[in-house]
Structure formats: C-alpha cells, structure tokens
Length: 423
Image (cartoon, rainbow, N blue to C red):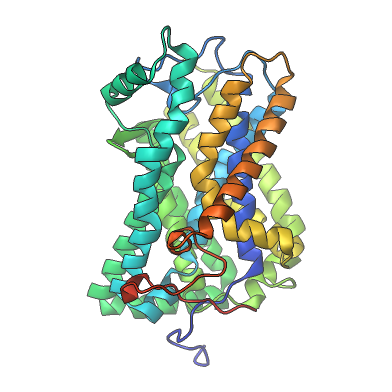
C-alpha cells in the first residue's frame, strides 16, 4: 500500500470501458423515452396538461397502440439501475480532477458543464419538448394559449434534466469538503487504497450504505413520489442512494482506475457471468416483491421494507453487472464508439425534443407500437447525434458538450479545457 501515490499529478486517463458504459446507458435512456407512449399500463386517454397531478411529466404522450408487456419490464429494469450508474460514473474522475485543478477551477468547470446546460435545457429545450403534450389535449391550440398554460403550471418542467442539478449539487458539496477539511483528502485516499486491497468488503459497504440511504426514505415517501421546486425536481426516496453511488465512484477513482478492476482481464471482467446471473436473479426478486406490493390496496410495512430491500439489491447487482459486461466485451475503441463517446452529453440534452415531436407526429398513424417505438428511437438517436456533432464544432460549445477536439480559447483559466491523456 505504501507504493501507491498519495496524490494524482496528471489528468485522469480516458478509459474505453467507462466511455462505452456511459454511451450504453445514454442509449438506454433514449430507448426508454422512445417507448414512453406505448407502454401497456397507460390509460386510454392522455393526461390533461393543466390538471393535477400532472402525470404527463412521466408520460408526456399516450398512443392508442401499445407494446407487449416485455417492454414494460425492460423499462422497469432500466429505471432500477441506470441513474445510480450515472452517478457512479460521474464520481470516478472527481477526485483526481480536484487534486489537479484545485477547488475553484474544478467547480467553475462543473458550473459551466452542468449549470449552464441545465438552464438552457430547462428554459429552452424542455418547453419545446413539452409542446406536443399540450397539443395532444388542447381543444383550440395556439402559441399564445400554450405559453399561457405553460406559465400557469405550478412548476417548471425539467424532464430528465433533473440529473444535472443534482450532480452539480453533489460536486459542490464534495468540492467544499475538499477545500475546507484537509483531513477529508487523506480519508478518501485511504478508502481508495482499501478498495483496492479489499474489493469485496468495499462492495459490501457500498451495498449496506445504499440500503441505509434508500430504505428509510422509501418507507417514508413511497417508491414513486417526486417533489419539485421550480425547475428542481427529485424522486424523494432516492437522493441518499444516488449520493452513495456518487461517493463510491469518487473512492474507486481517487487513486486512479486500476486495470485489475476494470481491465479486460480484471476482476469485473473475469466474473461477468456471475455478475450477470446475480443481476437477473435480484431483478426478478424485485419484480416479485413489487408486484405483490402493487396488488394490495394497503401495503403492510414489512412488505414495503422487503420491496425496498429488493430494489436496493437489484440496483446494486445490475450496476456492477453493467460494469462487468462492458469491461469484458466493450473495452476497446472504434469509430462508432468514439462518435458516441464524443456526443453522449449532447444526445442526452437534445433527445427529448426529437423523441416527443416524433411520437406526436405518429399518433394518428395506424402502425404497430413496436414499429413506432423503433422508428422513434432510430430517428431520435440519428437527429440527436447529428445535432450534437454539429454543435460541438461551433466555438465555445465544445467547452460544454465535452469530448473531441477542442480549441483553447481566450477564457479564464478555470474554463479552459485540459486535454485528457489516452491509453
């Protein structure tokens, strides 16, 4: 352990498997949002635009055609683990960047990369994405009527962009701890070294912390309730769990990502079969407990606790299975993977606008739901990818949208990009 460096002196290296995992989860998010109007459990009529509880925030459009039940299960699986995986990935390079850049510059870059896109998405992109929801139920649609009804809502729709403000809040909290409490720095490095020496015990600690963060809130608020203040929304049962995965990512990456963990022949890759089997079993257990809870008009406390614990297991198992599968089968680069890597953030920011308008355009067509969903997914991905690629080529946009060739502009030091090293 003494041979490990105490501080990181270089920009964290780009890791193909992590890049590919990030791309994969973005594709899953685009897929789910492409399927939204076609799930079998939706009502026959669309949700009213200006009537509480505004369930259109989760299902903006409702189509008369429906996909088979298997797609509902696929959606549930994605919901179980994708956001926790996002936070885990987001934490991996936080500590090396803090050490290298310092708190002020790091936080300035995060505000630029997360805060500015959140504002643009909320005040420009999401109103555009919300318009089809209004049009589906409006008796006499017009731009003026849409603006009036939109501004009369008791919240400002943020859609999936909630992730950006929560991640920025986590980054700010960690930056404050790094700057104000020097002992935290040594504690994080010791934990990171412990993770390398005892990975199984570390994983067990993450699982226990996730359970401690999720189960009490799930029992208090239920598994589905959201709260929103202006454009800031959050699912009330999950913020502590997300924080645990974000901090786990920080600890894993504090000493640098070692090949023994994420290499093509590392620990995760060697045990990909066991990880995948555990993910399937744990997700199946959660499906059973969740179905049992939904069939009861009043859910007993014990069943709610079992359901919450099963969710924690399913999330944990699927998250690590995704890491294992990617390190085993997608630990290399290629033109398509590089294009997705460079444009995943842009795809994430833009895809709702394209997906919801395409779904609206297909409402009146007599086409099977599977064909509609496939068409929406392919077209949304193509349009989002092309738009993101075009935007990244404009001056200044690459500073926000991320990877690829960037030009150092005459900007303050804390927003100048640093070119990462590659393997």
